[in-house]
Image (cartoon, rainbow, N blue to C red; front, side):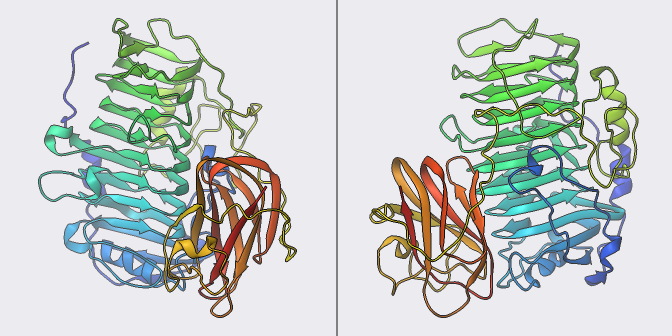
Length: 525
C-alpha cells in the first residue's frame, strides 16, 4: 500500500467545536453539574485509582489564563478541582499565572507539580488550538471531552515540544477520555507526537479518543535505555492517517483492546526494548506493518487474540525490522490486573465511530457493541489473572508508628532527589543523619527520594520530621523503579512492607497541615 500524507483535511465537525468565545471570568459552578463520566478504566484504575478533581470545587474557564488561574487559586497544589472548559484556548489567551499551588507557563496548559485535577470540555466544546497540554511531576489527572489540534515544535507558534498531550518526569495516574488529538502533518511540517509519555510515567489510560492526521501517534519512552515507563491501556480509540508510533513502546507493559486502526502508513504498534503488549480484539484496516518491532534490533513482545486484519500489508523481516505478520502469533504471555469487557473486533469500527472523540456525549460500550451512557461504575466481567511480569505489586497494609527499625540506616551516603523543594536546603538533608537539617516541599505536598547506584533490598522506612511548620497527614511510599505503591499512611513514622530490591524509593506527601519539614528519610533491610 502506498504511503498517504497525514496532511489530509480535518473533519468539518472540528470547526464547529471552536466557535465558543473566550470571554468572561472564572465562575463557580455547583459541583453536581461537572460533566465527568464515571470511573477510570484500565491501568488508570490501578495504583490507588484516578479520580481527578472529584470532591473539590468546580469552576468554569474560557481561556488558558483562566485555567492557570484556577490551578493557582487552590489552597494547595493537591486541593481537588474540576475545571470546565468552553471555547477556544490559544496562545493569545494562555498566559503564565503565579501562585504557591501551581507552576505554569505561557503558551501551554501546564499541569506541573500538582495533583487531583480534572479538565473537562463542556457546552459548545473545548478546543486547544496550537496549545498543548503538558503534564509533569503530577498525579491523579483526568482530561476529558477536549480537542487538541496542530501543536507545533517548530515554526510558529510552538507549544509543548509539539505534543498534543505530553507527560514526563514522575507522572502517575492519568486518564484521557473522549478526546480528539489532531495534527496536520508530520515532523517536516513542525509537529511531533499526539500522546507521548517519558521519564517515569506510569498508570495511564487513553480511552474513547481519536488520534488522526499525524506523523507520530505517540511514544512510551524516549530512548532504548529510558525504560521507566509503563502500565498503559489504550481502548476504544480511533487511530486514523498516522504514519507510525501507534504507539511506540520502549519497555513496560501496554494493553490495547477494541481500537480501530485505519490508515497506518508506515508502522503501527511498535513493541521494542523488552516491551510487552497485549493486543486483542482490535480492527486493523488499510494499513501497513501494524504490529512488530521496527527500526531496531532490540526485541519487543506481544500477545495477540481476536484481532481483525483487513487489507493489511506486511514487509519482509530484516535485521532492524521484525513485523509480526503476515500471520501474527503471540511470542509472550501478557496479563493485566484489572477487569474489562471486550467488544467483538467485528463491531469495533462501528462502535468506535459512534463513541470515540470529543463531543460524543461520553458514550461508551460495555461489550454489547451498542453505545450507551456510562454506568455509575464500569461493568467488568472478564478478569484475567495478573502475573508478576505484567502487573503492579498490590499495596500492602502498612502501619506507621514511632518505633524505629533495627539495623543500619541504608540512606546514609546514598543519593537523593525529589519533585520540588522550598525552605529546606537540599534533598540530601533527608539522608545525612542530622535532625537539625531538613527538606520541605514547595507547599504542602511533594516527594523526596533516596536512590542507590545498584538495587538495594529494603523492608522498612522511617520518616522523621523536624519541628515547626506543618506535619504530614497523608503519604505514599513508592518503588521508584516500577512506580508500585509499597505502603500508605497518615502521620509520618515507620512503615514495614515485604522485602523489595530497588534502586530508588520515594516518599510522596499527599497531605499536610502546612509545609512539612522532613529531617530524615531512613531506610532499613
